[in-house]
Amino acid sequence: MDKDRVEGAGKQAKGAIKDAAGKMTGDVKMQAEGKADKATGQVQSAVGKAKDDIRNASKH
Image (cartoon, rainbow, N blue to C red; front, top):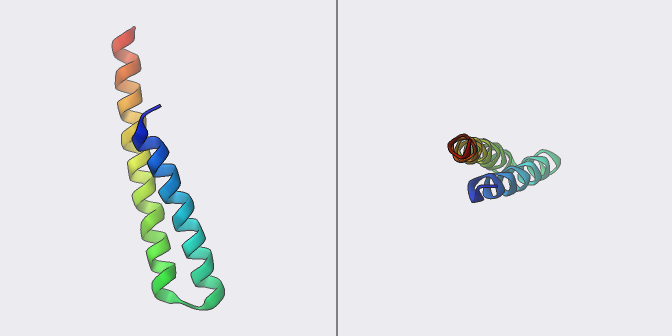
């Protein structure tokens, strides 16, 4: 598994926590940062998946 997938999953989790905390406290800035972290994590995970797919295709 590519490190980008792992790091991306971590960023998504961190973003989800920040988003939820922002909602609970009414902190719009924290909520926005959480949404941005989740989106960044999703992109990074997709890059990692593409790298894994390319690596696996070259083995066959």
